[in-house]
Image (cartoon, rainbow, N blue to C red; front, side):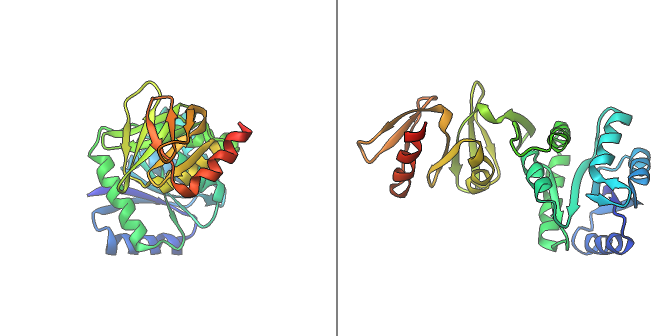
Length: 253
């Protein structure tokens, strides 16, 4: 069984979440509950659960306050965190950059089961929790221009500077990141998901299979159907419908 603590200031919502877990994730055992920042810190510190289902908005603060104070109190957070939220679009973006799981209210059973599968996979690894520090860093800064991204690979979660990502390549339902001065990493998410995150950071989708960091674009070659040469000396095709946009972008660089 996977031990868990549930933190939400609404008892009805806690009861509803417990019902969903019993029905759709019977391997999760709720060993404690809390309804505030204060009781959340106390319960998590005492019980040391493997997973914390954490509401963002609490009567006396936020779930982020709990994580901040746990980090100060214990030196590190050693639980997998799953946020539960009804809105908070900025926070959701921060979760995605930090490779942290979240569930939207009302919680969908399919989404819950997907999160539980990910947690099970994470618990099988010797994982670190640096991505929680990254989330808190982004929340503290309260800006959209995130500098780092957490990528969850088969052997754990790794943090990279966004500016060091040369390009991303689709491999079926996976994405391979080609990163400066390191070996490539394969992530079990689609290229479209990373396109949504990285476009505002100077990345451009030039092909169904390729998302590039324009800062690492060396050449645009018009012959042979059109392709680009990247700083890692890769030659990448440009789809017909992307050529005009890329040419317009290059005029402004």
